[in-house]
Length: 298
Length: 157
Image 1 (cartoon, rainbow over the protein chains, first blue to last red):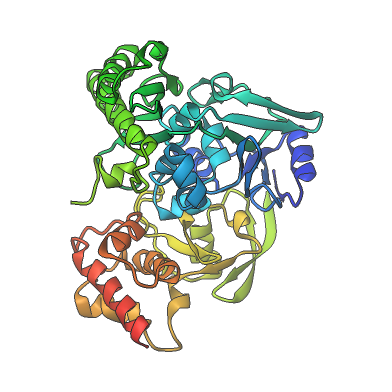
Image 2 (tube, rainbow over the protein chains, first blue to last red):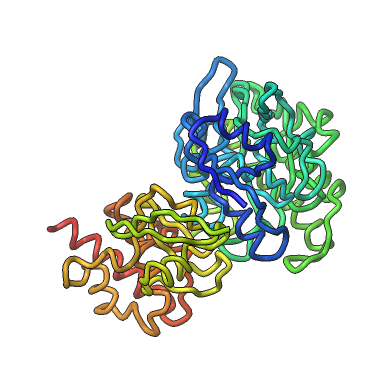
């Protein structure tokens, strides 16, 4: 049994190579251990005080978000809110203010819950994850990272150090919405993110959609290329049908599979509509859920 | 395995010898001996265990005590101003925002963090700031009013 506070990335990577597991906010790890989901690892290395791991950096290709950046930082970051809105929408819905202060983006990604609130947004934004080990680092797409509920393709000695998100094309917007029964400490019943690029005439030039809590991992909708050129309303309707058709939800304490299959189509349609409004230059406050969706203040 | 660490609570360093799996809540209550912080659901849902870590709210039931080394921990005992109640505590009493009182320490910590960051919150901002704290008595409105009254008083002072 050991608990080490890493002061540098090298210290953290050495601890992982020796068999320790990383902990940042601990919001999934500690709660999971208390539920009996998995015992607390015998050896832990705290990665929340490593310089640089909690920074958001603008690059030539887009934005690099350190793995230890908190949801609180993401929901209030002006560039992320304006340009990578679906990620800010998702971060603003995680847990409560307390969860958002200690919970990190890297933790949310590597916990690999299919109901995670940042995953669908990152997927439609085309994000890649940087995994680092002592031997070097590699980048993986989210589709290659998540393999099953709670499972990733990362090796035990690899640490998620950053998320790279490319700059969206001009006239693009994105949004993430979820169905929820209460406004805090909630897990998505279903959720949907959309990224829309508009053509100069207002038609949809490109659309990407990803769904949460309706498959073993975040589900990226296929077959949307054929929708290019359609109106926003037509594309939103087609996406809703595709979402309900491609979803493979389960029944559990939060909803039946039948209910999830229907409502994920509704969420997907609203996500496309909100993303298109943002693509057209309209500002919809973060998170979309509180501005126009379920859970909006009356 | 037990570990000897130091925790700084309300400005005082407390040496404690604890198991690394112990949560911060139980260490504050039984080792440090400050029982104002409450155990409600013990599952990161209700907010009764809310304390501040470097000024930000956390659920101490689901945070390891060893994670808090080198951080400033503030509990409800730390918001007293000498022997006097903090304006937030007084306003919660005067507005009827306290009934059974079990959620109150957690509410105070969340509201304290909110007012630090947002000195003049709207009602919606207060409700979001307190959204991790459950109260089964008051129906929340009187708690929200107490926070807004406190914000107004602090702005005038």
